[in-house]
Image (cartoon, rainbow, N blue to C red):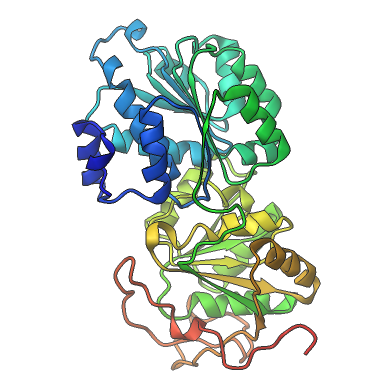
Length: 430
């Protein structure tokens, strides 16, 4: 199936083609015709499945009847509201709207906290048809009367389960009081706890249920490895991974903000360019860290679970769980940052003896065993001159490696030989 077969308008098809997409993903192939038919949707889809386009494309197609070039704000009321749980996801969705709507005069805006509200107020008062927002900041705008939602035709709840986890349900219910009763509602969620099901029953009218992957399904394109590593050796093993072959970018997950900052400093101390992203960082700092990472100015991005959903990094080769998440579902979201859109990916978990219970919970959740292995040996390259590449005060057991060939082409990446499992597998209890 192609996007042309889905019945989208030429303006949207042109933008999709220029973005390099030819065939819709399963969630897009199922959801787009349903939305175009005017039905409500309750969709279960993991991150990385292309769900943003599954509601953005048909929404742009449908709203094209309202497109105009008038300078009057009254001619540009909010027609679509997309709610997301995090600033990063809001920014990502907004960029998708801009990308796919580049040949439409429909106006779009994004509002979230952590930045000044004044520029957002000025933009909203000019009039926008598509508004992407986090719940808290949208309530600020409603209180300031800088936005009117009385003409909303589309309500999209993206990552609804995450908004539930983050305590946004009361805010969402307050926002709903500002929306017209007659509208289309599209709810996307990786999981469906009872409160999400209850919300769906309240909001959706005879919805079409779509599920392209079970909530505990990890992408088949991601190779998952688990290394047995005591806590005191994790940094050394991570440095070995960073300096191993074929990796130009590495996304590393930790559980705490303090831990993220500490690990970043330790990596920088041994000459590895790294930056951190977590909720204590200002929005500007978080955006700068992500841009530096995408641009290749830093090799390692250390993140807390604020980044498990909402980060969209093209062709990310590897994710490392420096610490296992306390919630097994977060493991799925973390490793979903790699192996996206059919490309191959690698997910490595460094598991200390204290984390064996967390690993067991993850294995139970994903219905898959992740045998604990010894970290692979790293070839010792010719000693380099002292400087950023030489770890200061590193023991002999912290090897360096020689330069390696360039990375393979996108989508055809091979797992670096040094990161493949060793022959000897060390299992619990052995």
